[in-house]
Image 1 (cartoon, rainbow, N blue to C red):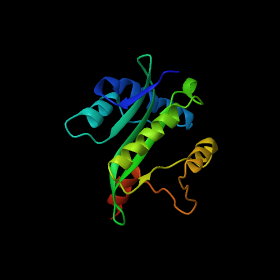
Image 2: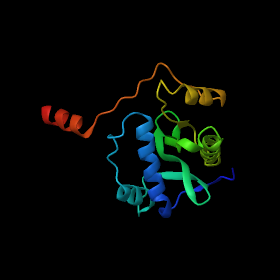
Image 3: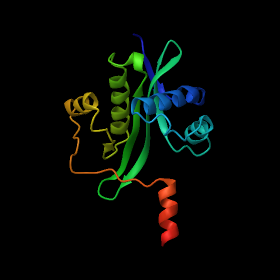
Length: 159
């Protein structure tokens, strides 16, 4: 398998969008995707990009991606958040995810970032094992906290 990993470009937006939908299906939430192809085009490749992405390409097709953005830690400084690392189902188990993972970590190291962080679902034991064997720490004592747009509205309306 001759996979090339490179920085994503506008022409990759459709493949990126497809992978996002595949991930939602894998995580048993196919209806949860609200982002549109136009959002990916604008937010990733417009005037003020909100994220960066590496893509894995095989024979002209996007078969994987690692989407990330910068964050700031009050304790550490500039960090990177890996939002999603996705490999198309028929390409899993062939090293594509590791190529993408390595690309992101090398990029962060070259940028002299203080930390790379991401979330993993507790039932995704193959991913947890992969991350731990790479030297990453999967914390048991931290919890992800979120508010949806509806929850934000309800809260703001109540104060």
